[in-house]
Length: 198
Image (cartoon, rainbow, N blue to C red; front, side):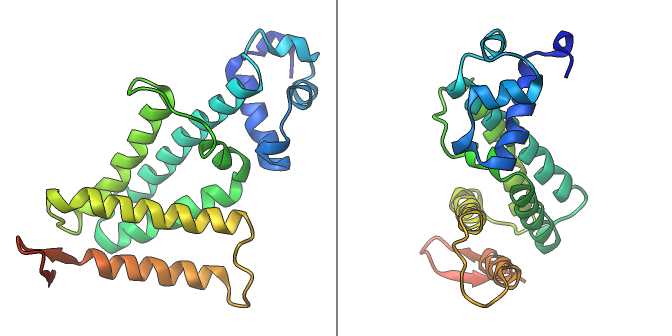
């Protein structure tokens, strides 16, 4: 990469690609410098250090994931949107394991923090999927937390090789999404009694 084109965005992209290859935990400024073809001290003109680079990678990943989920849901609703979004998220994580891991190790700041802004955009896309289920506003936050937790939990376990039984993980993933879909088709009255959506 020509030095004249080197900037914080280029360094972040190089770091993200390297993190996907070797793991974000193995990332170092020296390895990133080698990747972009400069001496290590030159990187500090563009990023504040390894922690800053990891943070930038996390922001990049969250923005990419938000775009991925938004695009997958486009033109779909209900079950179709849920399946498309879930599969898109899983595929993104499988293709970009290092940068996704970075999203789990940074500490976000206030509401104006770029990572928080990108996270909120992702959550809005996930919430849009729930609108097809006619969930009441009072229940939406619970449904969103369930959906986010189950998707995140599955892809994280898969990243860490946590599924070691003989059944194909894709079958388990589809089973999980089918179960979420069925769960979202219930709504609750004022007394907390479930009723099936038709």
